[in-house]
Image (tube, rainbow, N blue to C red; front, side, top):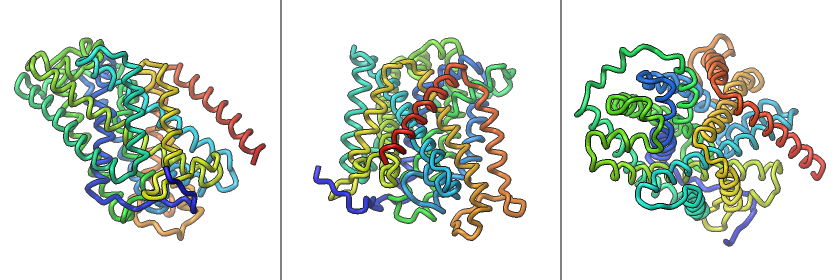
Length: 428
């Protein structure tokens, strides 16, 4: 592989178009093509409102990511922010980094399983086999370099968005999309919003790419907010379309809900949509693994993980060992198999990461008041930023919407992280 550990530098290759495509691609692929059926089963006709609530929570935290990523434009994102906010609490930054790394593995595994479900439309291949193969191929692209991965992402993103536009067109042609807007709100709306929060996961991953953006202070905030606006509009229109085409119960029972819904109107479009979904889910896996490898790289560069994970290729400065670690994490979670459990675990970890970003922003406004902040979250009282406070409250509310199994898994993960930290501290 021709690697070097120079002082482990990453190369600045991403511009505004590439970054926006990265963000839109990972958000779209992670959401509608995988778990809208589960959310519809909870929220019924009001699933569109679940998307709106999840988007608002994501937007609040997106402001904080924009400030933190432009203030500290380094690979590692949340781990770096916690380290700067609490320099004497080594365990806190270590736990944040490792937990998010595991969450990235859960995200990649979730969408890889969804890929396997859509692939069965064309070939009788076990989901676990196709999911593992997808993770492997995406890891090869990740090891190759960010420039090559970005071109693959642009093509795949265009394909996956065209699939959503096809669903919207089917809904417009078959029914009145405004009918669900007046449907009564169901008790499952909050749990649905907690699950649908997963569909916005991805925008935060561009913070891990900040070290590879040509002008992060200017480009990153624009790409971040534009991608959330684009995907929210697409999600709401798609959700209105699918509940107009199929009942929430039918959507919840389907492994490929969008394909099932569109076949009710355009039977010939089902296979086309499933093919598009393959590109969408593959794209999300690729981008998630890319971001996770950068986090592993940052942790290793600070000696929180073995130094070998900061090893980069000599030509393209790609963290290839971190890419292998990201692959192994995602592959290890595949045996869980259940899409809903994996998605909830991924969402749960992401919410904890969002809490960390908002809290560290509040702390650093006081601790490092003179630090350059190219982008600042609007609304403040003195040094106290108001938006992150609202974000913390909204995230805490969504955290109450998970099944009890998720909290148990979270507790087990924290025990494992504590043991890992003890081992790291002992051998350091």
